[in-house]
Amino acid sequence: VEYALAREGFRTSVHADGVDAWESFQEALPDLVILDILMPRMDGLELCRKLRGVSDSLPIIFLTSRDEEFDKVLGLELGADDYLCKPFSMRELIARVKVLFRRMSVRPEVDSTDADALLQLGDLRLDRNRYQAYWGEAEVALTVTEFRILAALVQHPGHVKSRAQLLEEGYPDDTYVSERTIDSHIKRLRRKFERLAPGAELIETVYGLGYRYGSQ
Image 1 (tube, rainbow, N blue to C red):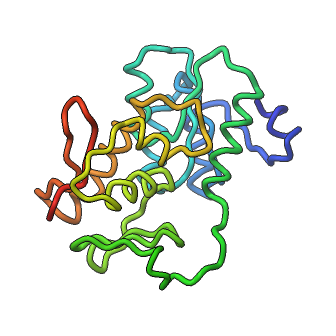
Image 2: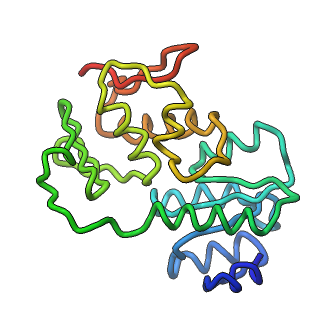
């Protein structure tokens, strides 16, 4: 993996176990993390949990030989952005790394006051030029994928969006991700807004259909 990334021009730092990686990350976070789930001393799930306590937006990819749906969903619920099950091709891994970096790329310098770029519904305000979300005066730290999914719901309040539709909005450049990923992102969005609006059911589940942003 290190060799494949280096050939593509990425600078890498390799760690033999989770504890060594965590100690290094406390000094400086990388731009992206690739984690194996089964690591000595501290497994990838625990390391992901710790990283999410430090940064909500750091891109994380899981590598796992455990192909059960439970492991995939658990990893995504903890905050991973993507996963690959072994054996996998290096070409596929590199493609997913590039997709995540494209999502993080600097947005065009445009006027943030552009009416088309601003979405506001009650206490929620979204700036689609800057990929920033606010609840009242408090900024909410969202990943690019979370922001896109939330914006798709807020743009049509009360309308039901299927998982397939939200998948297209959240992952416009990626055909690898399964629809179950949307459920994990929705859970993370709910947790983040629950801290600012306890008891508010902002995103409603419409069983058998998908999700909608409820009225406030």
